[in-house]
Structure formats: structure tokens, C-alpha cells
Length: 116
Image (cartoon, rainbow, N blue to C red):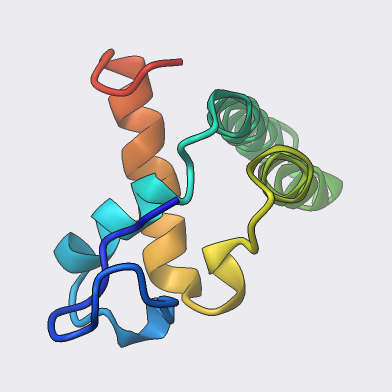
């Protein structure tokens, strides 16, 4: 799979996500790393579970919901990457942009801009 490389990098070259200078530059790369529909679906399910866990945390004050949210969010995403997309999650090398990408992709799936 070919993904967008940072400015000045040759096309098709291995991409280090930490080299992106902005989220706007990173996001096309991020979407390329989520081309597999099952991977995107698992991200969506995990993000929904994380939001539900956050709601439960706020409603109950039980800190275990924080752990549940992290396990939902990252667990489903990592299964999608390792099991279906066959790539390494960008969250390992670029956690902030990857976190932002997760939520933008989630919103775009809800709005029908990215196929579920």
C-alpha cells in the first residue's frame, strides 16, 4: 500500500510518522494506514466503547471504567492493525496525531464521509 509521505520524501518510501510537521499533513497518511474496512470498523467499535466507558466513569465515579475505556479503544484498534491491516499502529510512534486521527476518522465515519 502506498501512503502519503512527508514533503521531500520519495514516493513509496518507508514513512516515519514522526516526520510529519502538522496534523493536516499526517492525516492522509493515517487514513492510508486504515484502508482495511475491518480495521476501521474495529476502530469505530473500540472508540464507541471508550466513549461509553467514559460516560460510565462520569456517571459512577468508578475508576475501573477508565481502564475499560483504554482497553476498548486501544484493544480493538490494535486487533484491527495486527490482525487485518497488517501494519504497526501509528500510536506507537506518533501518539498525539494518531489520537487526533482516531477521533476525526470516527466523526467522519458517523457523517458518512468514510465508508463503514
